[in-house]
Structures are given as C-alpha cells and as structure tokens.
Length: 261
Image (cartoon, rainbow, N blue to C red; front, side, top):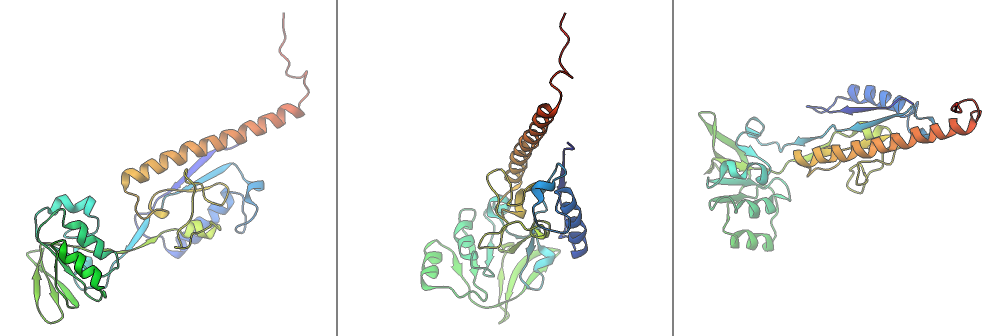
C-alpha cells in the first residue's frame, strides 16, 4: 500500500484554475475520479491534509488596505502589546467591532470607537461608554497618514480623529475550494466540519488551521496539524494491517512456515 500525505498551503487565495487543478489531483489521490462519491472503496492509499488558510476581506475605506498589518490591525491578543498605551481607534465595520472596543480598553486608556455605518443599540452604547471608551459618530471617509504613518481617521464631515493605530474586524473567508470541491460537509455558518483530529466527512481528506477554524492562531494550527498527522498515520497503519491480514489468510499456511531444526 502506498502511503503519503499531501499538505497544501497558500500564501494567497487560490485562483479558480488553481482550485480546479488541485481538486482533480485530490479526487485522484482519494479515489474519487470525477468528483465526490464512494471514494473509500477505491482509495489509492493517499490521505490529503488541506491547510490553505483563509483570506481577510477588508472594508472599502480609502487608505485602509495600504496600512493593513502595519498600523491597521485586527487581533488585540496578537498586536495589542505593540500599541500599548497609544491612542487607539476601533472602526465599526463589523458587528464584532463592539467587542473589539471593549477588549482593547485593556491595552490603552485612550480608545475611540467610531461606529461608521454600524447601528449601535442603546445597550451597546452604554456598555462602551461605561468601559471608558469614547464614541465618535459619523461615517468614515478615509485614513489619514503622515510620513508613512497613520495619524488619524477622517470622518465624512471633515473631522479628523487623531489615532496612531486602529483595529478593524475583517470578514474571514476560508480558502476551502479544495474541500468543498470534493464534497466535504459544512456547518450552518458555511465552514467545513471536522472532528477533533481534523478528519472531514470525506474519507481520506483532512483539514487543519484557519481553513476550518477562523480563530486558530499559529500555535493552534500547528497543534492541529500534529494531531491530524498522528491520527492519519494510525488510519494508514490500520489499513496496512487489514491488507496484511487478508494476504495472510489467503496464503498457503505452509508456504512461509519457518524451518525448524
């Protein structure tokens, strides 16, 4: 039995041509010529681990994309310490931005929440204000930079809110075309489902990291990969043993008998 693991990672979102080509290769490896089906019976002995991650879809605010991962940040746990005690802003481009504003107060006493087009409830306004975060209403028109550094957020009326860093919650989209292309089940949020070891609903296909978990950080994704590799190896071992037992039972019991003196 041939054994192998194909781990595929993408630094960018795969193109449709990339996905089609890789889907064809995956279908062949897991024994599903032509697409999803009874791949288990026809498997060639290869298991595939998909680790293609996700892509961040950023809000269409002028100047934001250019500053992404510089002084436009996302994860407070990853970057909060880098901008500790600085004037921070939170852009209300996603419902989760409210929680971002409440959370970032742990890293700075100077946090401004700009709802932008987000419709804040009275309860959210009270919670944000009680937390010590200032709310500045108005639609955001652009980010303002000076000497290649963020210096503020300009609102539609021309007011500039001075900030040295802002946090934004992007829309996270999994690069899961390889998985959905071979028929992996998805949950009600649209994300491919896996068990605790990374096994998908399609025999021979495993997935780890951000392609199935938007909150997985690097250390988490690495741990997922290790767990999948161990479980996958045990699966391959069981298949090898099954084949060995079949061969043993069908062989002449005297053909390979050891010669004793």
